[in-house]
Image (cartoon, rainbow, N blue to C red; front, side, top):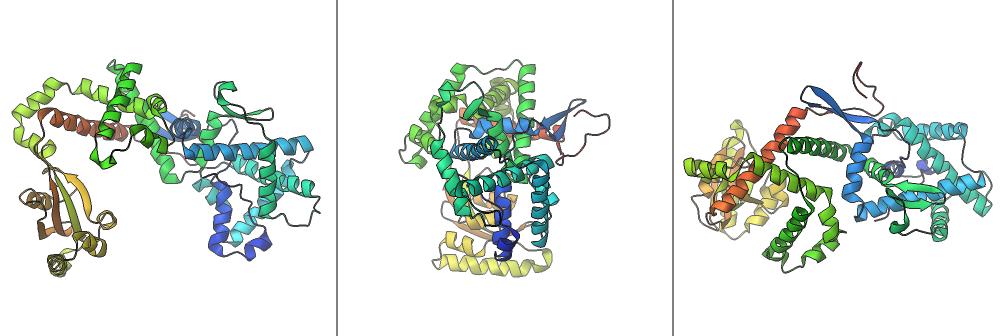
Length: 469
C-alpha cells in the first residue's frame, strides 16, 4: 500500500483529536521520513577476531534495498520518496522552501504540541533511529508542502491547510511528473524528479526509517552474519556460480510444485504474489547467501564425516535427525505450589476432549502458551531428542499412535496435554544428512553471532575514545 504524506495536526486540531489518533498522526510521517543526507552514522559495532568492526545505517539500508526494492513494500517507499522530491523540486522552483529559522520555529511548535500530548520529541526521534538533521529536513518539507498549497489555492497565511488540500496538490503533481523507464536511468538510480535523482540507497534509508527497533536490530544481525559467513567462505575457498544459483531456483521450483501443501499452484505464480519472478529470485542476495552457506557447511561437514557419525552413533543420530512426530499441545503454566490445581484443570480439559470438544478448540480456549493458543495447538514436527518441548512430552508422543491424546504430563514448564497429529516414517540416509547439515548451519549462525558480540549504538552517539568511526 502506498504510504500517504501525512501532515502533523496543529495545536487546535490536536485538541480536538483523541490522544491515540493524535499520536498516530504524529508518528505517521516519522515512520516514512525522507533520509537523503550523505551521513552514514554507525549504528552497531561488533568483534571479528581481535578487531572491532562497524555497521553503518547505510550498510543496513543497502541490505534493505536489495531485499525489498522489487516488492510492494519497496514500491510504496519509492512512491513516497517521489512525493517528497516533488515537494522539494516545486518549492525550490517557486522560492517557497522554508529557511532554517522558519524550520526551527516549526520544530519548536511541534515539540510543544507533542509534549502536551505526553510525547517527548527527543525520545521519539531516538526510537526511530532519526538524527536531528533528518527530523529538521522532514519539518522543512512539511512546511514547504503547506506553502505550495497556500500559493496554488491563494490562501491567506491564517487559513488552515486541510489534509485533503495537501493530497490534492500531490495528486496533481504526480500527474505532471514524467516517469523514466528504469532502463534509461543511470546505474544505482531508480527515479528522477526534475534534475534530482533518487538512488537505491535513498530507498534503503526510507525503508530503514519505516522499521521499528526490533526489525532494525534484526537486519543489523543479518548484515553482520552475511559478512562473517562471506569471510569464512573466502577462508575455505567457497564460492557460488551463476549456474549453481540457476540450479537452486529450478530445484525450488520442483520442490514447490510437488508439495501437496501448495495444492498444485505454479511456482511462478507464487513468486508473482511476492512481487518477484524467477530471474529476480536468482539474482536475490538472500538466495546467494543461502546457497553460499549450504556450500560452506558442505565443505565444513563433508559426506564422509556425516556417514561416519551415522554409523558410529546410530541411536543419537536417530534421536536428533530421524523420524518425527507432528504434535498439538495444550500448555497450562504453573508453579510447584499450584501443580495439583493445574493437573486437575488439565484433567478437566482432557475429559471435555474425550466428550467431543476438538483439540484445536481446547487449545485456543485453555492453552497458556501464546503460540499453541494461536495455532490451534499445532506446534509442528519434532524429533525425539528435540529441545522445543519438554522431554517427557516427546517421549510420550513417540510411544503413542496417531490421534492419541496424552496427559496430563507434568514438567518443569507446566502441565501438558498432547495429541499426535502425524507420524513420519524413518528417513533415508540422504535425508538424515540434509537434516544434519541444516542443524549445523543453525549452530554456525548462532556461533558467529555470539562471537560477534554486536553492540547497538544510539542515534548520534559519539564513537568510543580512540575507536573507529
